[in-house]
Length: 118
Image 1 (cartoon, one colour):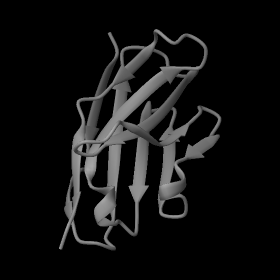
Image 2 (image 1 turned 180 degrees about the horizontal axis):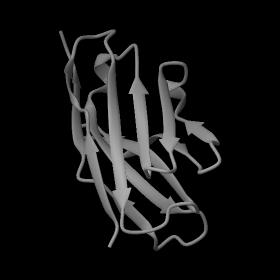
Image 3 (image 1 turned 135 degrees about the vertical axis):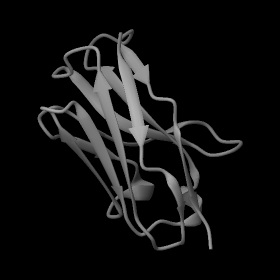
């Protein structure tokens, strides 16, 4: 059974930084994207960033140049370094692992709140 454990959310002032972590267990993740989505109140869940086991990355336009996703394949852990945070980054951030080819193999973490406010 796949399990995702997230950590690192919290309250930060505009311009500040946070680092999210997500440790995955219960499978072999070489053929999985690992990534982060977010959902703000009243909005749809959206992709923030994702990374392949080979290090290929995809970012939402709104976070390019501010956020960096990385992955430790030996630890099955994905990180999201968030710099230059803005109030519009406030949301619940969800870790996601998704198989490259098998759409049914798609798993979510419980979510961690990120609040950017002065």
